[in-house]
Length: 92
View 1 (cartoon, one colour):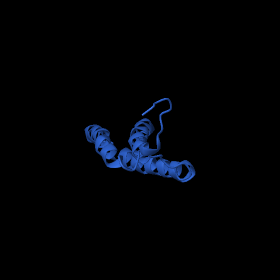
View 2 (cartoon, one colour; view 1 turned 30 degrees about the vertical axis):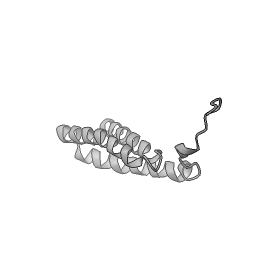
View 3 (spheres, one colour; view 1 turned 60 degrees about the horizontal axis):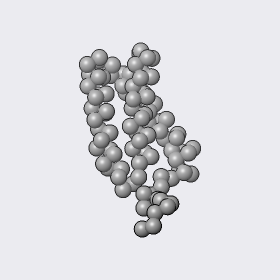
View 4 (cartoon, one colour; view 1 turned 90 degrees about the vertical axis):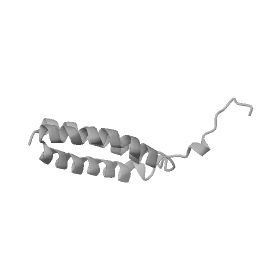
């Protein structure tokens, strides 16, 4: 198992998962649709380089990392709503 490819795939899979996790709940499906593009590129890379075992391990590690982030930080600091954003200085 090539650890360099494992690390690369773990990072590349963790970033879109993190973005989906921290997106606003109303916009999460749209963010998921945009995240399908990097997932498809990663899938094509895995098939081209024939690194299936590294990809499976990277998916598991990325899911564990994102779960741990959610359990330690994300649960206590939920994503805010864009409806609650107030802009100071506007007289509307």
